[in-house]
Image (tube, rainbow, N blue to C red):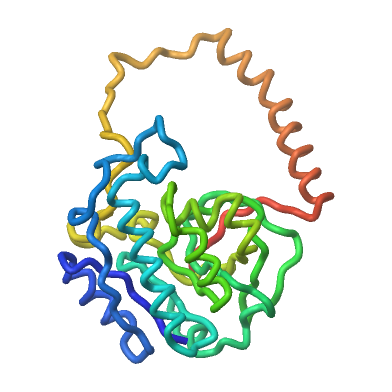
Length: 266
């Protein structure tokens, strides 16, 4: 399958790093749409949730870049393609999975091969994929730094992003995308973004290219209050009930054929 690497023209060092990581694989660079060159607000507008007018120009540019990858893929004849953003680290096993499509579950339109190491809800049943497993995603798992998509999945992606009101990862991996695409999660994941990997920001250009939704203001508390004895006693009395609640919730999930897990990278 072909690999598309989304890379901004103003991020040449990122591209050189990715070209080195993917040497020997069928990859090509796809010039990312630059948020600095299109219209739109600097930050997402909280008062316009889900509205195209409220989406920052940087998030819009990211959506347009992934649309370009889907369009380029559909112009060819491959059954699947892999889309990577240019700040990922990849597993040593990555080439084995790219060079062999037989592991992809039948009728699967989207495989998330990335992890953000957040806890996600998964189906209890899994499908063996070489020496890994694919599991149906049943909750949000944001991030679009690495995924494999089918031709049908690419067509669905294009249909969902004609007038985007959300970032591309929210479109694909929040409830609407989960219903339409039924993505599966590869476990362990084959790639991870630099920002989610300790020591991943190996040079300044690896910092995120997408602006924050709102300007970040650092708030430093004037002082940290010491916990009094009554507060400590109350906390310890409540702890068993919180643990019991968590156990009941997890048992309920298992009975419904679900489970919670943090997806590892390996």
